[in-house]
Length: 153
Image (cartoon, rainbow, N blue to C red; front, side):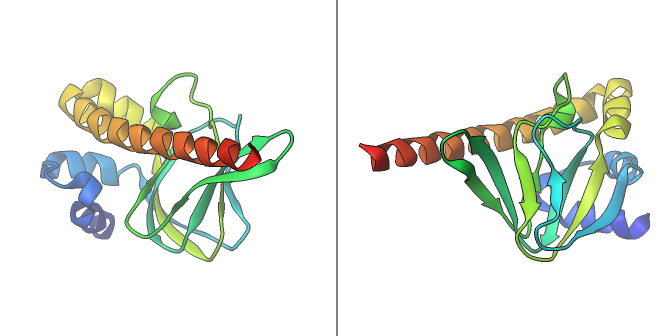
């Protein structure tokens, strides 16, 4: 667990988190690995994790009936993947699959939600950081859609 705490403390997402919060978060963390083409999650599935990508790349995709899978964003080393674990009804809104061997820290969303309910300071800090990721993901989706529709005109 100490190793996971150190990894979390060194990650920019958790910069300035207090040691006691890093202890709580590390208690919800585990190492995971995804081979190429392995899905981390699919749209509509229950969202109970988020990931700190340590190596490799993950494609975040949405499905268009006429175009099939459309890559919205590619997530790589040092980035965060997933915010649906924090917002009811806790369902994934995109698909995500490894496009190369990917190693990550998986954070259990149910575990974190319980800890955030007990410690509002931790919950507020996580919500602010996740909101920033959501904004970036929505902007990427917007740009992808503008590009896609501009190409068809």
